[in-house]
Length: 452
Image 1 (cartoon, helix red, strand yellow):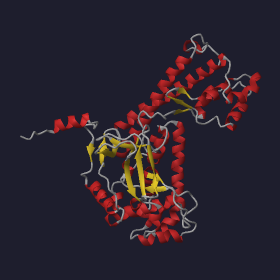
Image 2: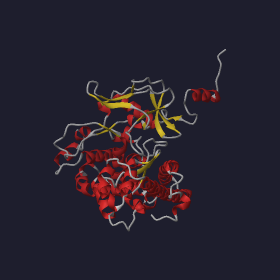
Image 3: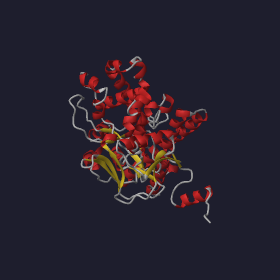
Image 4: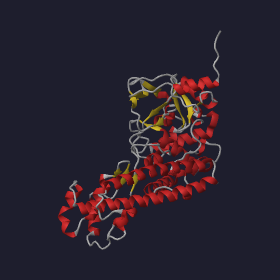
């Protein structure tokens, strides 16, 4: 008699094999069925990876069989890659070739994505367009009140990124208008700022790096983009190691795992050793437990350490700037960075120690009383960032109460960034406490009585 196993038994088996019970396969959904059928017509074959929704990362690819070390994770034929070459061979190609000055590779790809989305089911790439996100959690989508919740360093970069995108739209508008013969509706309705933002995020967050020969019909900007349907469902994990690139012999973009992947687990790739601020800016997400995560100390925060009575302060700051020591000052899981402590050591020096400046940047130690001063200042900076972090998390909790949809998703990703930052700062505070000598005049209960 054949034994029957119910849902509960299947869940137990999957849990033993490494699959989270709440992970749900998406391979049956019409959009993914259509995508796989379309890719199969272009020569793509893959039975070991299926789309799934994971509790921690959202959409991704699940291994349906063990992937051994050094085995191929995925191999996507050249015909399946959407590149500028694809665009130049399309109905849009002649318009791009005639336009002077030439448009950038980025604008060529963005324009094609917008046009294909407009054509819907009639578009050649509709099967791919349908599985792309409708919007993104990149900061270019953030309203001002959400932007204000970001740490200052990433906020400055995010505002700049938003301004650059607006400038890109304005400068590209004449080219967009030249595409009017392709559309039945006015171009202004098709190529809106929101459409360009969506296309820009699609290219920026989902392309793989692939060098292309310089085209005479495009600007001199580097052409290294390739949109890779299905492959772009692979999520980032900072601990994962893969070998990725275009294989000239097989004419496929291939990803090969270094350590392999277990059956029913999510298959990951690594986008690079990026901290969480860069991941948010470029990809719109935050990696939990990211070993590369840091908390940045901006110049405005560093000013808390300035002694305005120091007649050499201006010279010190100029010296630090000239030697590139006023940026990338951070706290990490192992405490304040060497760059931050080096900057503080130079700021701690007394007038008669002017001759030591260069040696300090090369790693020379300072007197113990100066080192204690630096640790104390690092504690002040860390506490200031902690207070700012707490205020932001409180504000996020308030805004989440009345938010839904895209706004709620944006608040959640900023909250994740702030929570990861808080964990780093708490670890740094502990490291600094352990490094402060017990006999130091800069002990917390004696600080308020000391001169800074």
